[in-house]
Image (cartoon, rainbow, N blue to C red; front, side, top):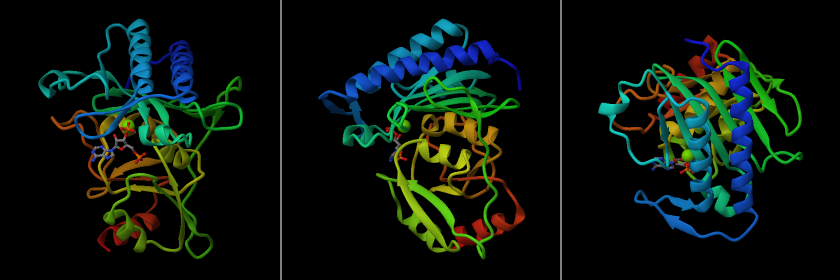
Length: 280
Ligand SMILES: Nc1ncnc2c1ncn2[C@@H]1O[C@H](COP(=O)(O)O)[C@@H](OP(=O)(O)O)[C@H]1O
Ligand SMILES: [Mg+2]
């Protein structure tokens, strides 16, 4: 693990992501066209405006580091596998929520080193009373939440409550549920569920506002990498739902994630509960 992201670089990155967020909001506040991509998922002007702004930002701040964006088109694994360090971005995660205008969308920038998301910025320009909320995570440095004009406030995951004492708070996708998710929840102790779009779900676990985010449905590496860096820097984990090993990026040709579970502090008690729910 290196100290590639200095305090100065971190500040410039946050500033640049906020600027891209303002471009996204300019589209959000007016009428916009919705196109459909080859995989049937929606695409708006805001996705592309954010993509261009973030790529320009990263090319300026670190010209030597390659970039993989959801909107940059496929880069063959034969090329990517040689990347020890690269930027992985999802310019607009939660495009369906953006189109529905419910505010639950994010801009995501992750730095990956040897397959591990070591730094991430998740910016939700329409979340919070102050006009946007940003989560930042950096291995070995900390995890923070920031409101516009405010300072970086440290965040951390919470310990999973004793199921005898309190109900667990589970976050799930607003637009992409699955039978596996329902079956998993049925195997858990008493819990309440909150639905939300985009990588915001991981940030809720990172800041200790939720206990688990089981994602037993498809996602891609750019959907999760930045927020995984926030979760891990806040003391939590993003675990492969079969092996309970941390997710890694850039290990294969496909950019699809395995099904996964985001959780706060690991301990034997909840690991047993998770395994039981996964078997259910
Ligand atoms: N069948 C599928 N295959 C791959 N990724 C999928 C998918 N269905 C949904 N996703 C991913 O899930 C993301 C939305 O997550 P959520 O349901 O938690 O809001 C989408 O991000 P985008 O909005 O960036 O396309 C998309 O990448
Ligand atoms: Mg996405």
